[in-house]
Amino acid sequence: MVPTAIISAGLMAVGGAVAGLGAYQLGLARAARKWDSADRSFWIGRGMATVGALLGLLMLAVGAATLTTLVDLPDATPTARAGLGIAGGVLTFAVGMYGTAKLADRVELNTLIRTPSRFRRLPPAESRSPAGAANPEPPSDPVVPPTARPGWVYRDAGGAWYLVVSAGAGCRLVSMPDFRLVSIGTVKEPVTAAGSVELAVWPLSEAPGVRESEAHQAAT
Image 1 (cartoon, one colour):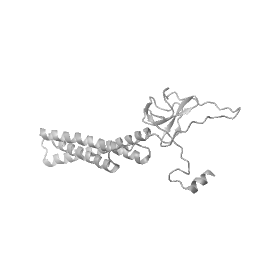
Image 2 (cartoon, helix red, strand yellow):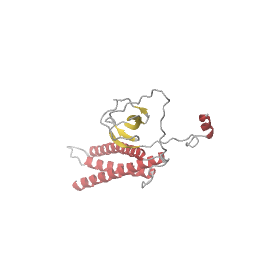
Image 3 (cartoon, rainbow, N blue to C red):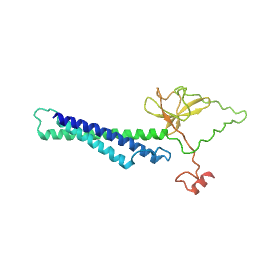
Image 4 (cartoon, helix red, strand yellow):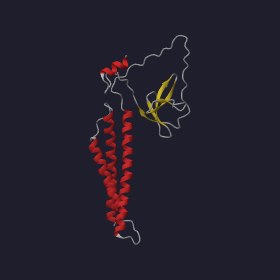
């Protein structure tokens, strides 16, 4: 029984590591597929990463099922032990699949946030107001740390994502991914830095999937 338990525990450890690595590679591959300038130095493609994650989950489930059958239950028949082992393996596989999916999503999002734009940075244009026009500066959100810079991404205590934008003499937060200006005092503290993002404006004539006739119609 002891050797079987050791082998099962080792199988679960290896399976968890393989599943985690597969989920990490899957997140990188998905990010590279969505954004041209994303890091493409991952080891394997999206298909192999999915296969690796599933293989790791299968090893994890087999190890858990074997360990479950070793549980000392009084008056347990072989059929009952087998059923208990199958239930333990299925439950472990389901929980592991949920965990690997969440890990792949997090890796994909963090990779996209850290990825700079493939377009060159344009110098900021000076903002000018008409002579005599009253244009008050919008107040700065106090929840934004004083060291924050426009383009940085933060997360609040509830797990929501926000982009720091310049607002006159201070900074405000824009919610992601809907890019709505957040009202002051509505963000849950504390906020923690998660990365940075760079936005680029695509001319309609160069935007992927936009026909020349549609670009001309929008411009006129």
